[in-house]
Image (cartoon, rainbow, N blue to C red; front, side, top):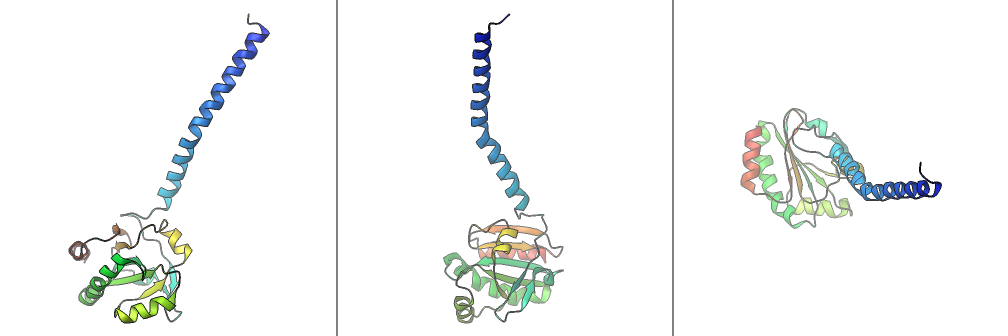
Length: 181
C-alpha cells in the first residue's frame, strides 16, 4: 500500500513530532512535579506545625512540642533584618501581656554568625522570650524560609492558624493572638 520510502518519511515525521512534543512538554511536567513537591513540604494554615528541637544560648534543647496546649507565636528572624527589629519590641510586650493566658513567643534566629551576634542583640533589646538558633533541617521542615521575618501563629492544637511572610502591623498580630486565646 505505502512505499518503503513513504513509510520511512512518515515514521520520521512521527518521531520528530513526538520529540518536539516531549521537548515542549518536559518543562511543564517538571514545573508541576516541583510544585507538587513544594506544596507537600509547605507549611500553611490548618496544617500541623512541624516539631523540631533546637539549642538555646545555654546549649539546651528546646522543642516546639514543649509548648503543646499553648498559643505560640513562632518567629523566624535575624539580627540584621530591619522589619524584625520593628517586630521584636511588640513580641516582648505580647510575651509579658499574654503569657499568663497560655501564650508564648519563640524566636528562631536565622543568623549565620550564630550566638556571637545573637547574644548581644538579645541583651540589648531585653528579649524576654526563648531564642533558638535555626539549622538547615528546620529551614527545610518549614518549606524553606524565603523571607524574614516569617511568623506563624500556632493554635493550642498545634496547627498553624496564621502565617505571615514579612512585616504586618502590631494591631493585626494582637487581633490574631486574642482570637486564638
